[in-house]
Image: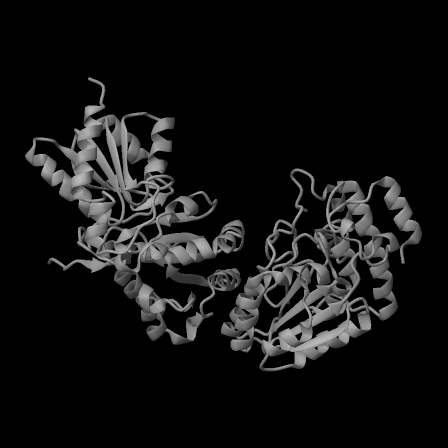
Length: 273
Length: 315
């Protein structure tokens, strides 16, 4: 089990703190991806604080739940979370994206706690299916979580994996879609819309839980529902907001892959919520 | 004991099934071509460790990576073109960058695929596989060697790409022949020139050497079953001792075994080199024999290249 569980007010405080640290880490690095990191903060806080079994002092512990970060560019929220939960010293966040750092631009196994190198979209779910299949072969009850971006599921490989998970009844797979509505060049709905998204996954044979993905209580309930569902995989469609917490970044595709400078960081921290 | 010509895919399938019965860590992930690749022998032997994802090569390789990350030795299989081209991004990122214990077993490469035509005749797999870090690339020359190659890649940790033939190939080795990944086998001694070949071209090279012997030329034949890591020592020895080299492969002349040998010679001991391969062209329908002739991959073409390369030697 995780070393400790947290109450709701502590989790909410962590979310605010993570957003500040994400912005600071990006400003220090000078490049990186704020939008999809800020939208996914509550997902990370909930998974690491409440939902997943994990041991920061033993990242390779056999019994841990596995989280696959399929959208590998959200390294800022990944590293801030792992550092906060004790996987490595917070001081190391300053090395993000720098030569020789364990904190690469897109997530890699060099970082304690990261399961799988990613950075090309649409890879995570098939991998998570393999992990889940392995759990069943080994008679282990760990879970495979796979966090994907909303734009990411425009990749056809995601739907190959979606068919496979349902066909093989991988009820130990939980896909999470960070549905923040924005991709690199604009609104998802204008570039290649996903709707009706819940219906798509239902028709592929998945249990669909469609919730406010920036609401920790709703996330906890969703993941609890996943854990007790048998015979089919679960997808949590997390309705979130790209750039959440910094009003001038919210729903702006310009903040998908651009770090704030010093002034922008100061402005952001003044209005951060 | 002589064995009739046999496809190397049969050696792969039989050995995979035999190892699967003994080793519960071996798992196969398939994409609906296991009948043609002979991975179905494993399916029959170990059904509980055989999974298919349907016609979805990207999914097959991604899932294989996930299984491998949990300690399994995972064998994927398909036609060479679908495996290496369709799933290239998964091979690069999921398997090679993550350095996982996934074996990519391909059949139906080269023009000996025959009647199916160009779409299925993969002629670029060596080129696109050998440039990826962490992966090893092998292409056994006959049925017996295919069994040994299968056993060797399953015994070794890490990514492998293996090309097996659909066409029956003459059996050139025997149970006692040594097979070590990364160590080429000299099949025939010679001092006038060396032919470095792989897969189906090894028997053609031996036939070429036989013909040239009648003309008084003494040609060495090397079975370079491992394209990566390349046996540089053997290549340099051929350059030193025979002064001229011909490579032969059922692959584009660009990017494959010939290119790998050229890279080696250029950086060690440059000697005249001729590359026998397909010249910047797709294949077409026909019998394997017709196609080997048309694309100049026969013993007679190798013999012509040997004469040419000997003519280019410094007097």
